[in-house]
Each structure stands twice: as structure tokens, then as C-alpha cells.
Length: 75
Image 1 (tube, rainbow, N blue to C red):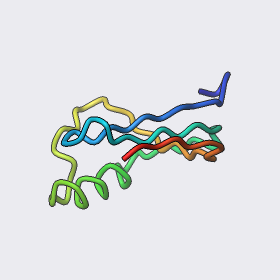
Image 2: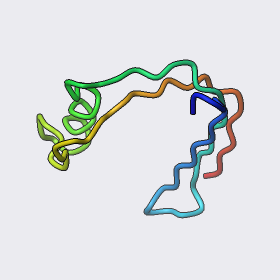
Image 3: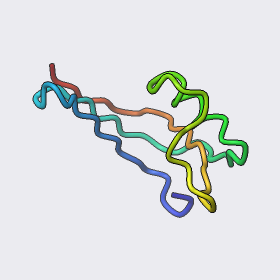
Image 4: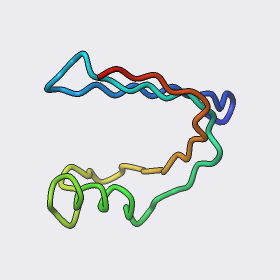
């Protein structure tokens, strides 16, 4: 990602496969997340738990900030 900051993300609705979102852009910055703040906040929001339950010792987490430049969607 540091060598080539271009990125594309594709998200499909598992209940309606014809519904999707694709975002293309460039990475603005990458931040370490040693305290797991971001993944724990996502676990709280989507799983209803305070700590991400699938973290393994030795896992290293980062947060990638993307500047969106183009989006395509359907549904």
C-alpha cells in the first residue's frame, strides 16, 4: 500500500447479491492501532460486544484512511 496507494473496495449485500458498492481512491494515511480501538469499536457496533472476539496473539492492526475518488453502485 505504501508503494502504490491506489485502492479499490467492493462491498456486496449478502441478502441481495445484485446490490453492491465499489469505491476507488487513494490511501491518505495508515495508522497503527496497537490498543485495538478501531476493531473494538466495530465489534461494539456490529456484534454488540465490547472487545473483538476473534483477535489472536500476534495480530497487528492498522487503520487505513482512503480518499474516495470514484464510486459505483447498484441497488
